[in-house]
Amino acid sequence: MTLAIRPAQTAELDAIRALERGSSRRFIGVMDALAGDEPTPWDVLTARVAANGLLAATLDEALAAFVMFRPLEDSLYIEQIDVDPRFEGRRIGAALIDAVAQRAAATGRARLTLSTFRDVPWNAPYYRRLGFLDIPDDALSDALRAVRREHVARGLDEGARLFMQRPI
Image (cartoon, rainbow, N blue to C red; front, side):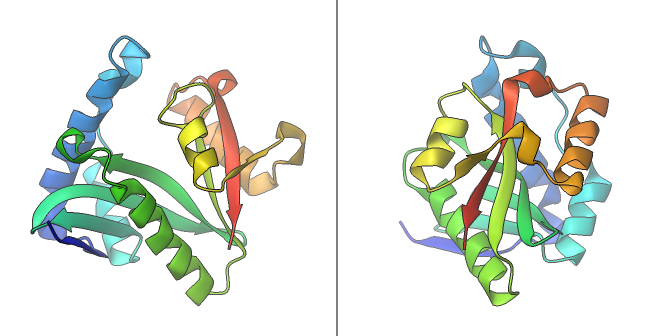
């Protein structure tokens, strides 16, 4: 199978939302509230497409995964990354993160940042294997603290989450 990573298109946003909804099912029995969470709103996805902050990964032209990101200080902040459960274990998520890192390097950014669940095996432990390092709470920038406030407003348990970074 041939993996391709390219900018997402507005015409595939319904498929991206469906992929996000399907991927969230892996939280059933781990974080049930999150498993039933609504996918990213259309207006946010549309804004990311317009800003070149949404990449799609396809395997033989079938949508397999996506990553959504935005500039934040000296980084590109990864807001969401999901792999269709049918395509897990093929390093597609790692390839998407590397594609975002290439974009960060091309724009002179120093790092990638993200926020994830501390103890969920396919979250923080996975990102550590990809070279991400924990950011201590007392070292969070004002912008990352603002992201944390956004998460709290959405009802996320920030006590279960941490911020991470990967140098470029």
